[in-house]
Image (cartoon, rainbow, N blue to C red; front, top):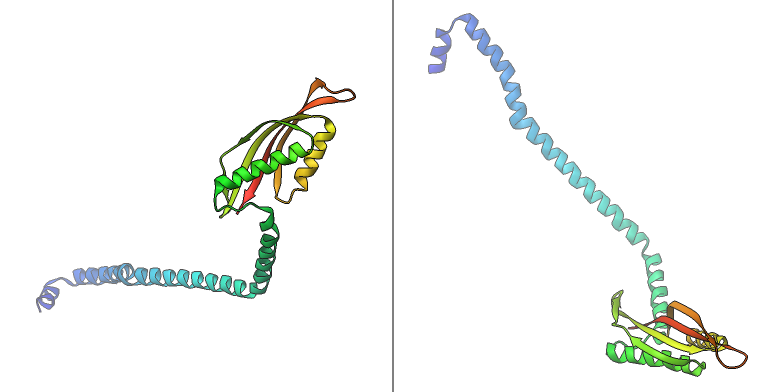
Length: 191
């Protein structure tokens, strides 16, 4: 009861000032201690609900697209089955790279080119289990032999990609033809 005694000891003007101060201070304190934390909690809950709603919409779209995804997966699996015989076996990357170099050399030699250099580069991992091999090749021959070699490489049972090709004239070779220099970077793939 000391507050009551202190309140009686104050003049009426002071009591009015205290009441007016309380009328101003109580809402401010109530806003700082009650309303602001409540609004922050509501805002945070609303954001969580929006996040969950977006996740649900995404999952519903995925569930609705499941038949399309299955058909795309089946097409990709079929494409992989078609391409697999055209790639080398990657159980031993050194043997696969050597087989790739041998196949390139055989195709060029059978086409009538004189192979001067075959340099196998390091293999590079691509897209999961796919390995990429690169071979630098230098050979000489006439124009028909170069065209024949490119046709053999294109029609090869294994996938051979010619990524860089340079053909230069060396001078007169055999009668009726010119000797050309054939330089190429070829890539093969293994799974």
